[in-house]
Amino acid sequence: MGLFQRIKSSLCALFRGRYPWPGLDIHLAGGQKLHLVGSIHMGTRDMAPLPPQLIKLIQQADALIVEADISGNETPFRDLPACPPLRERLSESHFQQLEKLTDELGLSIALFDSQPLWQIAMILQATQAQTLGLRPDYGIDYQLLNVARETNSKVMELEGAESQITLLRELPDGGLALLEDTLTHWHTNARLLQVMIGWWLEQPPGDTPSLPNTFSQSLYDVLMHQRNLAWREKLQTLPPGRYVVAVGALHLYGEGNLPSMLKTQHK
Image (cartoon, rainbow, N blue to C red; front, side):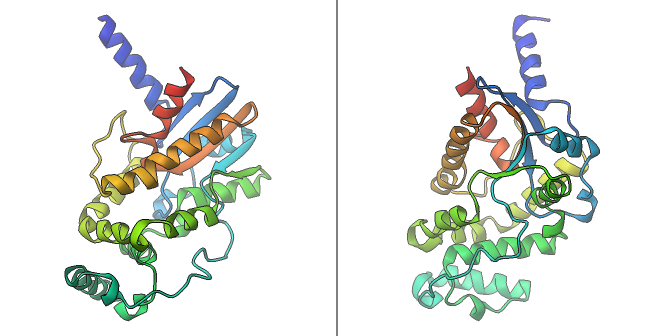
């Protein structure tokens, strides 16, 4: 085998790991041993229970680290100010797209009339996942948090729900781009959800899976790239130890992904 092939094989082994779920190990210079898990926030019944090997990793870890601890019952959408009517905030074409989609989903567009555009996008995405058979109780991070609670394992947050809502509230134009992307890439997003379910039920992805694009570049930078940068800094400041780190699966793959940032910094 030539030098190039040996390097390629080594990199493949490094990224793919030995796990039957989307996960990989990274050891940082500060003595932090991370097991990164590609989570899906809503899952199917077949995605429970979690693999015994993953449960064992949590039991052996110093902490489970998640984007936000979602094990409570409080809603993240409380105390949001009312917005002007949708017709004042959307173009006629986008309003008609939204009206058509809500009708297909059996929702009343009137319910969204005073809601922020980013919140409408989030509700639509959650409804789409439910129509595909996904439920929050079978989400990977939700199950991981249950395991941590049952085993008295420490839980840490990378952001927290309040920070995530603040990020959404600070999107330009009330989150118009997020709603536009949701409407434009509606069917593509459905396919992406099915792909990620396959990573858990069939086999994890390879090193560089081909993923459909459901974000504009500006949104990708805010919702993916910049958050990965912030998470990298937080993970690098952890005390030495073993950690299971669960983040949305798309944060582990694609442009500017978290593993590549950690590996580059580690070098």
